[in-house]
Image (tube, rainbow, N blue to C red; front, top):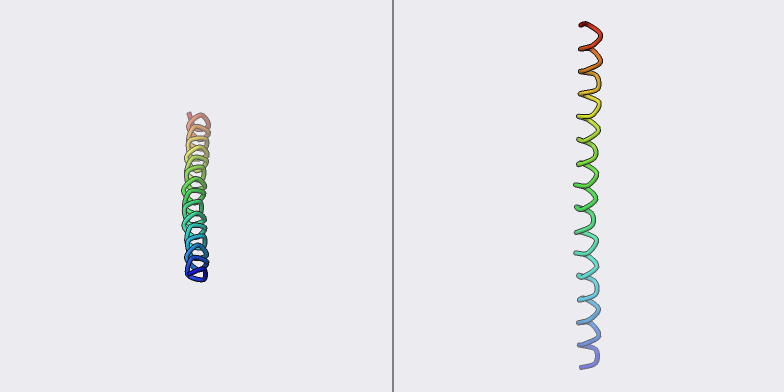
Length: 56
């Protein structure tokens, strides 16, 4: 029985860490994409107004 509980907590700890890092992987993935699109549109409007005032 002791070995049974030992492996039980071992795999429990293993899968817990697996989903833990899996969660944070996607968390930072979407977090990174959020700022990526943020700066993308930021520079997009920057050049838009730049050409707007340049030609007008």
